[in-house]
Image (tube, rainbow, N blue to C red; front, side, top):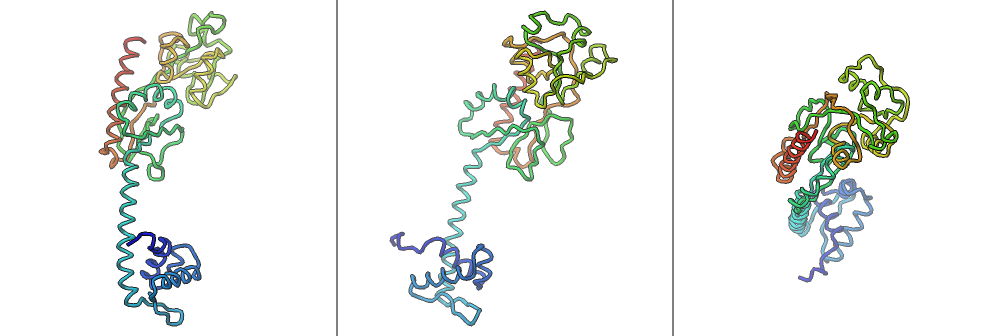
Length: 304
């Protein structure tokens, strides 16, 4: 049969719903159209086929013998079409990997390294979500999250990735190249950059200056990546996390002040729903991520 002679798909969907319910009103509710629209489509389909599909008895309708046979075949055809569509969509989703992480970690740690994952797995369509909001796997289309926190994360597969420390950095040209010589001299500086998630008080205590209060003046940065950029631009001295500062330290855009670490109570975690852990795309990303973590550890161990 010439496919051009088939009734339009919308008319067949309307007929299938009306036949299943044996009610034009219920079919209209299901399809979000009016009763009149359903009645009009059924009448047009009957005219096109040259036979009645429903018998009308006042406001009630019943399938004719021809309507019963046609409804069975139309339903089977539409179900086959729905199954084929689902398989195509699931095939495309199986190639797509959605990873959520904090904005600063995504920009400063993942992005410089992600090229190696893309080269290794060109079959995976990677989507990186940069957000500081906690991922809700029950509501969001996310496969994996890299969380920075203390946990716990119930009902999820959780693996520790990386502990974190913080230390002060600045541009090598800061203050004309005359940098603080002691922690006390650093603490006395009026150009300490501040952020919500990195408290100077913690580093002061690690440096033996626990009596000093948290600085209250100056610009307050909400995002650690912006804080780091301000330090690179010579705006002041920043207390930064090791994970996001390593590249700038390696390239010489920043220098570290003193070999004193403030250990963070938070760590980085690999998090995903347990059913997704076995999927090929998640396993591929997990393997690559663990390799990069080990490479990173070796880097800062060899060169503090």
